[in-house]
Image 1: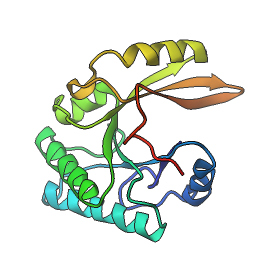
Image 2: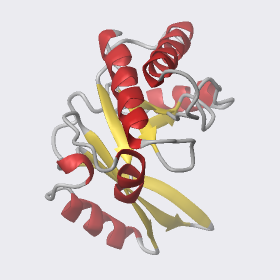
Image 3: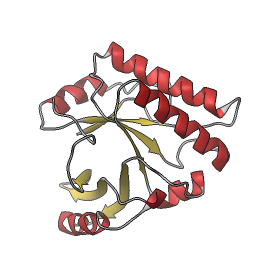
Amino acid sequence: MIIGLNNGRPFTANPCFARQWTWANSHSARAIYINVSDPGKGSPVKRGTQIGRDTLDRLADLQIAQDVPIWLDIEIDNDWTSPNRAVALINEVLRVLSTGGHPVGIYSVPVHWFNITLSAPVTIPTWLGLGKYQQISAGVAAAKAACSRANFGGRKPAIVQFVARYESGWLDRNIICGSPAGLVSRP
């Protein structure tokens, strides 16, 4: 279970986090994701430091262990101004969180990663978003196929996500492409 710490934007709180985290802790593995953005004001490195420190403060307040992986959610739904600023900010958030003791990775969709970073190379685990599938079996097949090929950032994904119809709605599903070590932690 990978639970959102913020409410779609940096410096916000997911009002359902405590309940969702309790639920995640009742399962075999868990991690956290945070949304990241750059509105283009001031230094991108300073903003990256602020996002990283805000995240570490929230995790400490919630008594979340340092071994819990943190995934940076990089999507075009948030503010981004230029690839150079985006890469500087993302690298700084990753540095702060890693220095704080958390394994880190990046979640994105290939077109989002291209539009935000101009396909910057990635050296850490990636979590690839695929899209919607009418049937779970089709999503599973696509996710398993995606595990074996390089995608955004030039890396093979560590996790692949797809969305599939479930009862009367849509539900995110994730496939881990190998060992879960460093991608999720045990409760």
